[in-house]
Image (cartoon, rainbow, N blue to C red; front, top):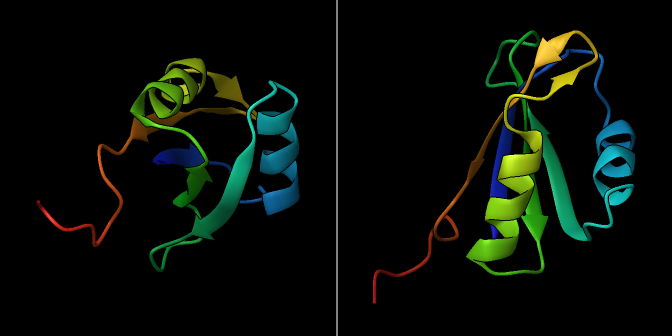
Length: 86
């Protein structure tokens, strides 16, 4: 399951974000930072080894949190990108 975290400050590193998430006892399997061509619009794609309930819990912990001068936005994806609609 994946959670998108957006409005990250441009100086955010994978290590900073991993540490912040893992301090809350949430185990992640992958983390990617994306800028979509604009370094001031940084977002993270966080992959968790959990179902939607676990991803939703992370979304609720992060969404609206003030972190390093920014109010974060989070969205738990209901299915993995590229997954079949079976």
